[in-house]
Figure 1 (cartoon, rainbow, N blue to C red):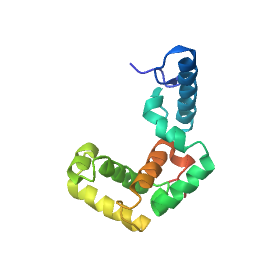
Figure 2: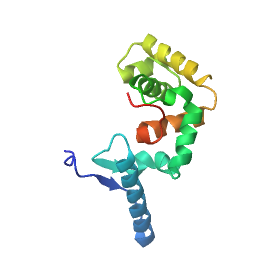
Figure 3: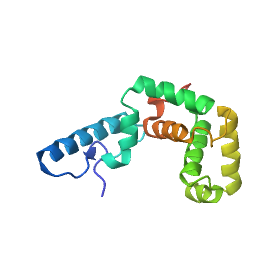
Figure 4: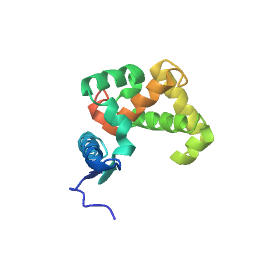
Length: 154
């Protein structure tokens, strides 16, 4: 059962002792802050699930610049750009497997191939280049949405 929509719960990692409690509390506070700023506010957020985005979003202005630079025109605030980003994120998460990405996204294999190609055209480079940076930018765009993407809202 999820908490009511207006209630958000965040949890830090499990740790021992007073220092562990403090660290867990700090993590929960950071996860909660990120969740409040995200495009998909969750009812329950585990720090472990958003830790990378928390670290990457410490300076939101620099995060926005980073996302714009890494994603180029694919950072637009449009439904199409969002689908392309989600597709490439799934494709990379599945070690560039078209079939596994298609299964996760509930689309045809050719749809994934088309979207990856379109994404590469928008960014002007292969998704294999600067993969770590690309995945970090995609994670930020997924979690923070309009806070780090560019362009006009659809």
